[in-house]
Every structure is written in structure tokens, then in C-alpha cells.
Length: 370
Image (cartoon, rainbow, N blue to C red; front, side, top):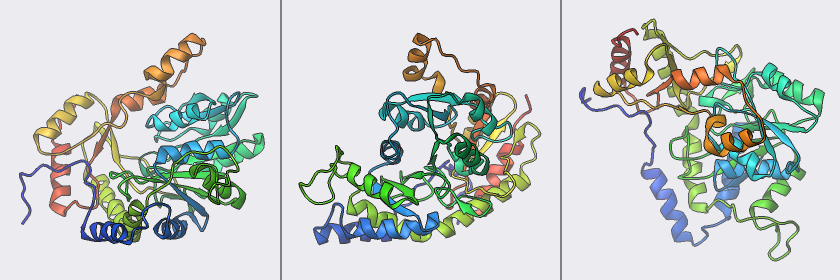
């Protein structure tokens, strides 16, 4: 029986008996790092990205970082990135030694605006790093055309968008490389970990070298690499979760449809979905036209968990603000600043019951207008 007074969390990671049994099985096998579970996970995740080569690593941030390094992006290069994202999107660029150039998001959504990207290009631009934020695909059809015209690499940050698609093509299958995260709050997880997808077998081999100290055969180092491997324990958990991804995704989409169809508060703007887009709702993120923080507090009082992703755009964070000020660079990103002040993510995870969804809707619809 559902407890109508229990708090409904904004996210609920799943670690069930199957995941526990998979982890124990690997521990008992003695093959715990870069073994058969990792290879099987890479092959199985390829089904999510239209059969592309997949390279497992220890985090989504590592996936982004290694993708940039493998593409030869580094000092002297610029990479265009949205400021409205988790800091890892820009951090990976800095870690590769390249400079971050921020571009604004589209007015109706939360992903990079291709027109803003084009306006941000300079002779030093080497790549575009679009983020499929909250599970909604960025405008990859226009971004890839733009990249092709200017000879730029494209690295997709798909860390929040497992199984999202645009016009039938899954995210992670548009650019030169795609990066996924398997952190516990993602649509599927492997306790911790990441995956890089690419259609280029040579790039895949370079990525495998970079994650494993620069070697394919033991002690035969070909390049300077690092230890960014995924463990077989994580891969075994990831394989269990990947098998459930399709069902969980459909539940998220159905829960989002219910919320969108029943939230009627005039000052709460439900998520926009672009034509041809398959939004997988890592987050169900509304805009509050008014006092967002007061709305979050009222929802918390009603037992509805919420979260703000992201209250401070990356270009306003200290590691980016201070160096840009010293270099005399400023960023005019009005749609990014507005989104950061308005967004609020509501529960949408697969564990919600119909009564949970009704409680979320009732609480949202009861919010006072500003």
C-alpha cells in the first residue's frame, strides 16, 4: 500500500538483487579489471548507439576528456560548449588543454543554439561539444551540418541521454565521438563509469590505448596514456542495467507525458520537445515564472523532492569567470542566465507510482502564482 505521506525523491538510483549478484559473481571470478565483463558491456551498449564502437572508461568526465584527446584537440584550440550544463562539459575541454568558448542555448529548450554556436566560431575553433541536457537531444542535424561546413570535430555529451534520439538516430551516433555517464542517478548506471562511442575504428583503438596507460599489449606502450579503465564489477552492474534501459525509458516517457498533460499552473512551463526528438527525461525540468526557490520550498513541504540543475551557469563559476576576466573575455548568454534562474526538476524516475504522479501534479498545481 502506498504511503501518501512519504516523501517522493527527485531521483532514486536502482541497485537490486540482480546487480548485487552480478557484482558478487565477478568478485568470485577473480577477473575484476578490464576483463570479459567490460568487453561484453561495450558490445551490448553498442546496440544503444546504432552499432558504433564502444570504449568503456571510469566516468563520463573521462569519456569526454579522452574523446577530445584522441581527436587531437589541445593547446591553441577552442571548443564551443554550452554554459548551461554540469561543469564537467567544460572541465574536459580545459583538461585537454584547449580553451572553452561558451554559446547560448535555444529559447524554448536547454540545449545549444546552432546559431549561437556559429556566431562563436573563430579561426581557432576545433570542435563543438553539444550537451543533450536532461535527456533531450541537441539540434544535431544542424550542428553536424555546421561542423561539416567549417571542418570541425563534434563530441556529443550524452551523459544524461541514454537512448535519446533525433529523427530516429540515437544520440552518440551523430558526432565523431559520444560520451555517456553511468553515475548512479543516470537513466542507467554501473555504480560509476562512462562509455565513448565512435564510428571510427582507428579512433576507438586510440581511445583504448589512452585509457590503459598507452598500451594494447602489456609493456608495449605506444602513446602516453592514463589509468581510466572500468572495472569488471562496474561493467557487470552496467550490463544488468542496460538490459532494463528500454523499459525504464518508456516509464520515464510515460511519467513525463502524465505530468505534462496534468500540470495546469499558468506560471509553470512544462518541458518543450523538439520535432523529431525522443526525450528520455533524465530530468523532468520545468520553468517557474516567479520565485523558483519559494516554489521548491513549498513542494518540499508537501513531500515532493525537487532539484535545481544548474543554479549557476558554468561561465559564472570561479574557474571560468576569473581567467576570462583576466583575458578580457565576457559572455553574453541571456537565455542561459534566464534558465538558471527558472529551472526546477520534478520527480520522473521509473520507480514512481500513479499515486506519486498525482501527488506531484496536485502539489505543483497548488503553487501560488507570483
